[in-house]
Length: 260
Ligand SMILES: NC(=O)c1ccc[n+]([C@@H]2O[C@H](COP(=O)([O-])OP(=O)(O)OC[C@H]3O[C@@H](n4cnc5c(N)ncnc54)[C@H](OP(=O)(O)O)[C@@H]3O)[C@@H](O)[C@H]2O)c1
Image 1 (cartoon, rainbow, N blue to C red):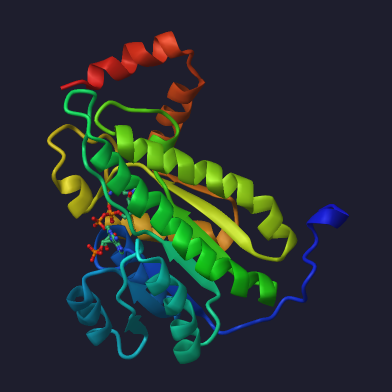
Image 2: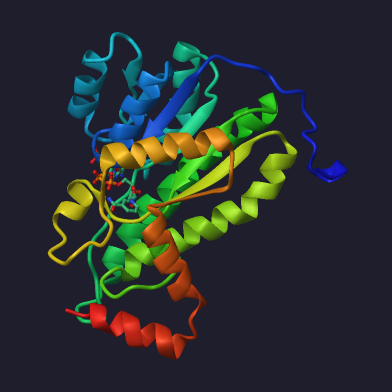
């Protein structure tokens, strides 16, 4: 490690307190449960307060509901101090809040684009803004941002969704070196297909699909390594990286088969 990448602030060891967004269902919920099993105290956020209350009721004090809408910047900015006042400094933040609306050139609506970017990109941006400063101040912490393999290649049906996830990959790549120099680890999580309410409405074959529990297991294990990219399952990772390497003529020859 070069001189420039050494943390400039002394590292502060804190208790195992995590903050997870998108915690009311799917991958986020499974990550909350997996972390709790590993002995973490977890602050769980999403809009559906009832689902969060259900999660915490089953967890013997380890899971705490902090309902919020990630598009509400003030709510996000005030949630981090609220969590830290109650549970202590957040050592791990995993951002899973996200939305997906299938969209094509036919019937394309910038409203769908705005909503998708608003939740997936700007909403995650609000969470990053809220958590980066306290972690940098402590010279410690780990942030995991959930994007998608669709961030690698624009796929028919995922126009707005893929754009939001490509942007998250770029955003995190840009922030990573600076945060690393301050002692804060940033990881990008790029899942392939995972069985959740988000994919339940897909009526096309979803290759290499895995359960939310398997996804959470892989995410938590990947976060433990501290590596930048957590991409899975490996067969999907291989396929999407191959597609990404192809020239556009060949890429389009493949992706046009995904048109309805
Ligand atoms: N499933 C897949 O195949 C797959 C693949 C790659 C990436 N991903 C990504 O993984 C993440 C989790 O997706 P999932 O599949 O688990 O979907 P999901 O079951 O639909 O979960 C989405 C979560 O995001 C929360 N959320 C949505 N809008 C929000 C908002 N404005 N403010 C706060 N929370 C909000 C939802 O809770 P509320 O409705 O209660 O707010 C829910 O907890 C997403 O970022 C998704 O893009 C999923």
